[in-house]
Length: 345
Image (cartoon, rainbow, N blue to C red; front, side):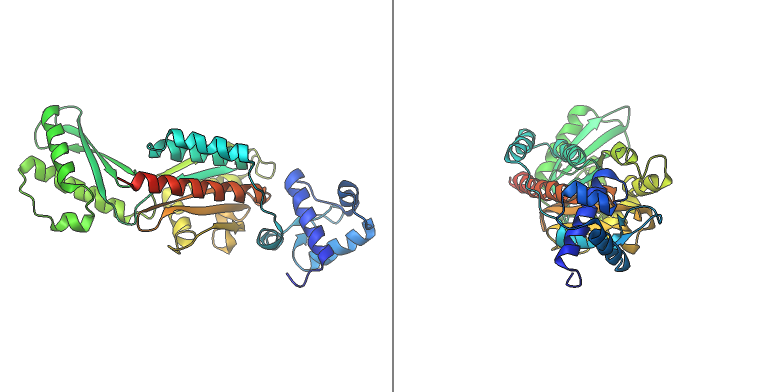
C-alpha cells in the first residue's frame, strides 16, 4: 500500500467504483469528466499506466480503458473500500422481521438468505446454526404407513433432523407419542458422548428408537455445518460477465453441491473457530478454480461452544463490496443474537 501515492490510491478506487457500476473498461477521459477531477486526462492516463505496471489494473485491449485485477480488488477491499452504514430505517425493518419469527430457526435462516440476496444482488447462502456438539432437545415420532415412522429430532440451537425409519412392527400413534415424550424427558440436553454412557431401562421399541437417535446425532456431529439455504442464484446468472457463460454455473455448483461447499467453508471461515468479522475471497484465492471469476463474502454467526453458522454472498469480482460487507456484518450480529436467544431454555 505504501508504494502507491495518494493520487494513485484515489484513481484506483475510482476505477473500481466505476467498473463495479458499469461493467465497462474505464478510460482516463471518462474519469476526469465523470468525477470532475482537478487534474488532466494525460495525468490520469499516466497513473493508469503505472497502476497497470504494478499489477492493480489491466487493459483488455490496446484501445480500451482499464479494469481491476484480482490484486487491485484485494487492495481495494483491504485498504480503500469505505464501510457503508446501513440506514437506521432499514436496520429497524430487518430486525423487526426477524423478531417476529425468532423462535423459528428455519424461517429466519430463509429470511436471512432472502435479505442477503436482495441487498447484495448476489447469490446468498446461510447455513442453519450447527452446534459444536449436538445436544438433544426434543423428539417427535409420526406414524406414516404400516411400520413406517418419521422421526423428527430437534437439537439445541434449533437444528432439525428428520429420518424415515422402518420399525419391526406397526405401532399406534398414541404409543409412538408416549415413547417420544419419555425419551425427550430422559435425553434432554445430552450430547452423543453422554448418550453412549447413559444407563436406561428400555423395552425393545424404546431401545430401537434410542439407537436411531444416537446414530442421527453422531451424523450431525460429523458435519462441519448445518443445512444450507440458498437464494439469489438468478442474480449472478444475470450479470453481464456471466450471461450465458459456464463460469457462473461452475461457481454456483460450489454452493449447490454440499461436499464442495463443506470443503470451501472448512478451509476458510470455519478453519479458525475463533475467527470473527467478515472474510472476503477474491478470485478463488488460487485455491478454487471454480471461483476464479468470483468473489465471496463470508461471516460466522452464533456463539462458539453453543451453535454457529455461516452466511455469505457470492457474486462477480465486480460486486459492491462496501454494501455487501455491511449487510453481511449486520446480519451476522443479528443472527448471533437469535442463536443466543434460542439456546436459552
